[in-house]
Image 1 (cartoon, rainbow, N blue to C red):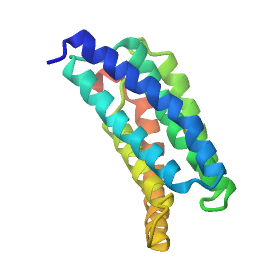
Image 2: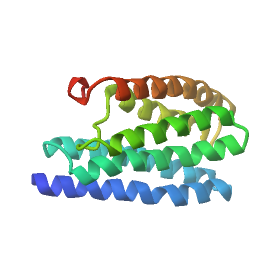
Image 3: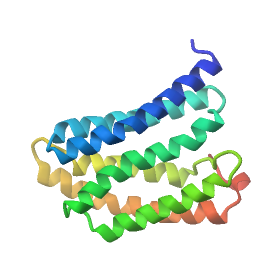
Length: 178
């Protein structure tokens, strides 16, 4: 059984590891190593779930982890989204809109003492984005079907991104569920 401090340290370590995955992920996409890119993205998504679980188990993560976690999610999600936009798989305007949302919320979070805990809408957005990307980047059989599903799943994730942004900037943190 891990102590609270050990759980927090492990959660922080997973967060750092997820940030490091961003560069090999974009290199894998750029060099045509689609299966490696897919596995790196899956590993990143699973580490996000694991570090959240560990932080909750410890009664809350570190302030450092609370600030770094959403930034690593953005690296891991925006890198392949920008690649998909450059490849013409998603419209660039939608990715730029999402990027603007992420910059806005990152700025808002920077002004929050606690790092600005994630809302349920923000968490759902992240899950949908990971699922959408895993489908869009599916490297094995049935690619057309999986990529089409990923494309259509991207749009609800964009709507959740925009609506959760509105919630972050208009609803006081004390009224938000985290």
